[in-house]
Length: 464
Image (tube, rainbow, N blue to C red; front, side):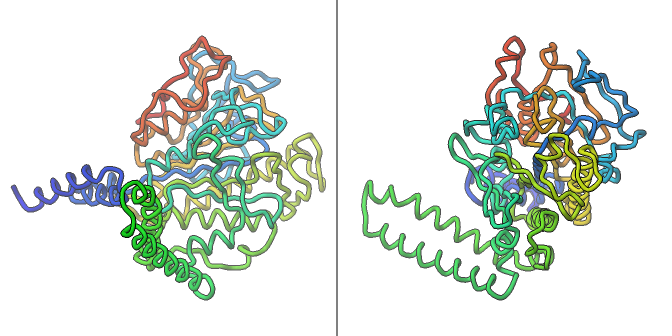
């Protein structure tokens, strides 16, 4: 047996034996590199972009496709899967910025999630959007945190976003790590920057990073000394605390080791990180998300533009000084109709997503780019409208997760609600879990309105 063959077997064995330890992802990649499998060695990444105020069906459906739907409420009327290629059709103006990535784009229509009703007076499904359960309570883990358990990075999950008030620090209304366990979305770009890139930012940011490192050193040493003085049950109770501090310490040490990569890709702390306007703050959070993914700080990111509760944003920089509730109820402003307000705001978000795609595409990885190993999921926490009915929850996908999904250049409209082959948002999330290597039969809570249908499993049309 050659040296290289022995090395590959050794690395494979170590990775399998390490199980769920912190080294497992790194060892798995080393084994893949040793086997010459560059694509498997590259980490997979998922970015969720959640926008408040609904994602209208006609804003994601090319008019020339002539999708089978009711003219009044735009609900799908097809009883079998309807598919059309995107290549020969112009995208609607609301998502026109995605045109350069049309060959990576998949538009999904006809997925329902009626079970997610019940949150925020019909203005948001809250955690139900990513959790597929009634939005009034936190009944389980949301899909982003579930994928964070698989695609582990230095940070298992990173939440970034903005709320209507610049001083608001956190949004706890969209992500969850389990029943009654909300997960935070950091809504202050400057604080998020200092937390993620403080070690290379210089000035107070670097000093804060060093203080955190020293503090973790002292606390870990103190716990070790205390552990040595204990025995039996008390020592076992202390062990989880020691493990937690050691994990934090290892994270700080890893950040020190990747200084050059962080320095190369960290956004510059310029004015748009500090200005309070919604457009500037959201642009800053998108830049941070791209940099965090490129540098490996996190492989699962949720970007939230408002969302949860009744968090509506105004965009005065776009000529829309009123918040989304105003034009959500048919009001115009500054000579713009409510429809023009929706399209303007939607185009802005699409541009941010497209710019992020360009950044990921520019960074080479394995035989391709970071974008090749990434999936972006764009949807609204309010389904298809300001006051949604959730029979048809539009979702836009960009990317194929390193070849694990059969996406790109596709318009897919699943059979109408209660028809024999209808699919739900839960089925989409089950598809993502299967592509991630963590298949399961159910996600969230089943829709009682579909009790005569099998609601389990993934969507085979999306799997590679």
